[in-house]
Image (cartoon, rainbow, N blue to C red; front, side, top):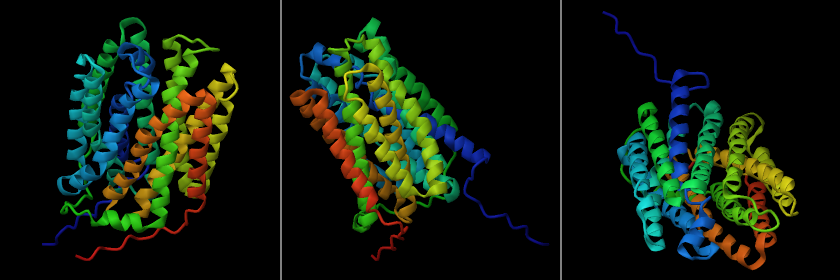
Length: 404
């Protein structure tokens, strides 16, 4: 009797049913995670008034959550090497959605800040593991596009996380705004859980932190981490404090209208998918450099007190940011051939550390020099990112197997 050999499993490619399901699942994961992460950002002016705190202190409601994500991504990614990518992502998304339902019940600023920090820890699982999951399961030729679509989901999640509370708060107050956001995020969590395919190429291993040191010795990865830190610090600064500018003179826009600035993230999300595909075709470095330069050019357009220029500039800035993030995050997964979850976690540590520390520092710039000082601060950050990307070597270096 002749044995019939099953063909070896192949990683998912563009057009396959498996990749379509992965794209939908991680799109939903991006929605729920980033809705929850940025649910307080559009409400910062209202929260400043409700709790009688300064803009810089109110921004802690964003910075504490992103800082908690930064601290949690490395240990959580290591747990995924032991317990599996899908399990960690599902537990994380459910836990963060449940914590989100508690936020509207907080009665003091200290309580709200503490619950936001707890939510940040709970949120860490999806961003810590998603890029490694894609690098494991998706063929290299299709990885850039898949990464771009995941980043698109995170971008649209950021839109909903700002738009839903911003609109609801205008007629129902900030508590109902946060409650509505939490309920929508919970719905996307259930969709993610239902759609996510199990890992086919993941092999459990022991929790080992030694690959972290190997990744940090790679000069190319260090530069990608610096890109993540600086571009995210600038991005969060712009979205934290542009709201204050548009509410004040000379614009005096209503809150519901100001919250619509989040819609620019939709264009950024679409641009991220195109940037990831372009990087697969044209090369990662030129697309990364072009995206950073595009963001800086958009930021310059926001300096004159002309509403149309501010809107166009924000749109261009947002597209540049999402393009840079899509390319840099995908490049980390390709460059680190082993310990991918930990390499991606280091990228995300830098990314969210930049969001937490850089965003709060942007508050100091805003309080001392208003929007001009804030924009110059962000331009300096993007100059550092451009220099790091320009000096990034093009070799995809194999991180060697570590000796025990």
